[in-house]
Length: 435
Image 1 (cartoon, rainbow, N blue to C red):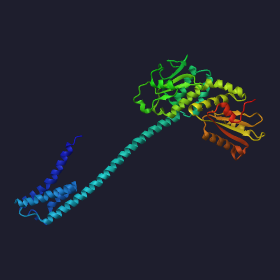
Image 2 (cartoon, helix red, strand yellow; image 1 turned 120 degrees about the vertical axis):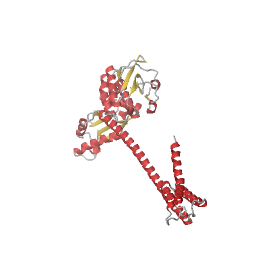
Image 3 (cartoon, one colour; image 1 turned 180 degrees about the vertical axis):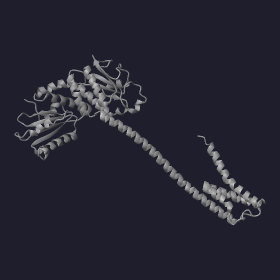
Image 4 (cartoon, rainbow, N blue to C red; image 1 turned 30 degrees about the horizontal axis):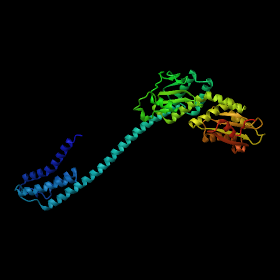
């Protein structure tokens, strides 16, 4: 930083402060050598330090007063002025100049504080303006994402069901391509590829790809980590600047029997999509898809134990139970059972007619002579289950029945889909294996 201009300006100011009083005394002595200080009853010379004090502050007033007093006394002693400066002029003028300098200094301090507050306010306003602009851009991006991309996991699972039904015995090219399109839609993957295991070796060529179809980069550190631990690996936002690998995220595709089916590698996705929530959704989608063929075999075993259990209900319960074990995604079973065998079944029929797309219903799980229904709510925790029951209570109120399902003569039991096996979950609902 160059301080020379500031030093030059300070020298000019101090030269003005010290020389103007000297010039004033010299001019007064030249105009009236005999009585330069009392030619008028008003001490005009003391206006010089007073004005300098007003302009530059207390220090300038003191220096100018000292310069004027010394010059006035010296001019008399040296014979340049015929009279000595009156003491009353020296004292009164010095006090007036110092008072003006003190006022100027205080005013400058307050002005400096006001300017500092103004500068701080302007900086804060500029910072808030930038933050608002960034927030507005982020809001627009999120709004665009919400409009073009439904990000609910329920919607993704509903779209996955037909894919599993098309290829129940493995991952076909059509199913893999549809899976990647689904991930692009829900998780915003822009460049990704699915590589399958062929004879226990990971294929270099992908079975399906988003963007360019490139060979597998086996030395990528994320891929090495994911294959070692069979867990999702991804780069955080802080690591992107210095990344050395080709992939931003790697998802092992492993079914519930711990059989490796393949690996999904993601080369590119938007920065706002690189979040733990989005990657968890992608992991849940892949796990749900990978469990399809495994769940088909498990469904046959469960239906052998419980022949009356609908195939789709059993299949979905098995997959959701394993999804909870692997990803912690919650689901809920709701048991509705009439206390009176002769109870009106209109409510059960109405509920079945208004079922949502992802929910599954098992009608009469306790036998044809017991009005009952078992409802599987995928991806529904306690709050969602309460909302579902409130919706049923609203249906009852529309029919003129107050007090909810209990008042309508039904017993309601909620069972969380947790670590228990599907057969144990159904046993907890009161459905036992036939002897």
